Image (tube, one colour):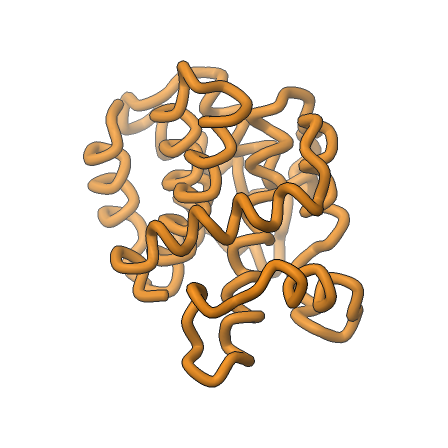
Length: 187
């Protein structure tokens, strides 16, 4: 599977623009992390980002959180895409389904998912609303404010440290990734 095939699959199953944008944001962060942690597998890491929420509109994850992730894996198997590495990374982004992250790829997905939304929330408080205006210190300051972006799970974002990357290094990396992807994801 390549990026275009993954995007086609995402667009087949996910119709909401917000969810599509989120998936492409996670892809950008995952690709940037792969450049640092696993440069031979940048494409795979990006595909994980694109497909991590493939089941967003296909299952009732709000009322039944454990189905989020396993439903994506079922869709991918039905479509004949992926392998255990991809499936496990997708499962790992939602520990509520019972699968616990154990590899750098899995921890990266777990951390990148909420970080993408968190940075987008920080951008919204800037006058122009653009991620390019966001400063690293603003993200780190807001990270400490429990009332800010309460839906962004800080413990999941801190899982990045299991890859050997500290939060203080993850934030500028994620910002750079999102600035680079800004045109595609309208940031």
